[in-house]
Image (tube, rainbow, N blue to C red):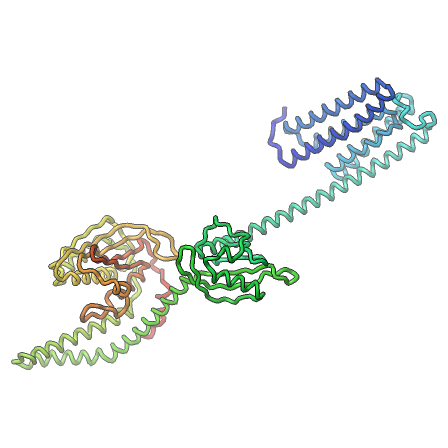
Length: 582
């Protein structure tokens, strides 16, 4: 009992082709024999032919059913070839014996054997057919069989043994030659099919590799044909240009596909018309959402083996991060200049300033009876000396900010201590109601606690000074998921807010609050918030400010929960190199 199986596409196709072709040829050949026998009124031969035709149809049905049941196709073909040789022998017997015209049909199973079993199968089938035909001839010569329908042969009575043997020899030669040729042709065809399959596999692999390369390129890529129609737009190009991949740009002229980006369309069209590549340069394009993006683009010509232009290839990158890096480098250059200036100030000014301040203190203690303008001038000199010393200290702290030392820190405890300091250590803190609202109890983050305290204390002092007439300051902390930079993914962060209900910061001032030396406070150095911003940046965090007449002012600090202690930003390394001599 056979176990049914699922037919493979190639196996089922081969079985069907064999069965259908066999039925068609057999029906035509036996049908022709039946017609001739009926015209000659040979009832016995006609009945035998119908019987042979029935055997052929029954064997065809059996072949298909056994194959569906799981029998190997090669086994079925072997049985089928043997059945066909027997059927052809019987067909020859009922149509004239060894002299039958149908004896040539032995080449059909030989061809089948050669197709399925190559040269060896063709030869074996040819030998089987030859054996069957020669055996029948010998039986006929020996009088053991009496052919039916002898009239089909042109001159049956004149046939001699020599002629019969010659006919058998010729049939054998034709059979063997047919087996060799069919087997060899089948062998060559199979090799060609395998070569084609290998080439198709290589082409598919190359196509997959190419698609994978285009899909995973970080640079945008656009390919056009010689007529300027779009052939390829990779995912990076869609992302950079803000395109919708469902818009279907393939086959669309670049002037239509990028009609809202005329600069880009013009670049591609110009390269096609001029036949000249475009070296890397920068262009500004307007994305679909209306935002401006600066691209670094280079355009190459796509040529064939005859050096004919088949299109253009445009490769481009979004320069937003590069521009931001340039901005940071310029900022680092400015900080390097500040560092050099601070070192010079510390060396040239601090020593004489200390002497002046000490001398004034001594004079004030030795001179008695100072009053009025003299006393006020003496106090003014002392205060301004202290302020000048504080400015120099701020310069040095901003320029020589030390690298953070990251350790686990309890953010709620840190905020509680800052609130206590603000209530007791600042004059304005006594008139300000300070509350803590935190939903991140027990949250620990990796920070340099001393530097973060400095940031919080600076923000708290500024808020208290902004509410000199009294008000409310709320310190809050919460867990959020935030993307801290373009090259990072969303990560768990702690968001700390300092919200006060004091007067709003003017809108024109907001963009400059974290810039060095920018201040609106009389006597301020403009470095407090700049130092706070640098500390937050060195922790891979973000700092921002929001202010409105209705909602007061809010400073927001966002710090990642996890931070590698050895992580170092590129601008920090630049600054350290610049300040190595300071």
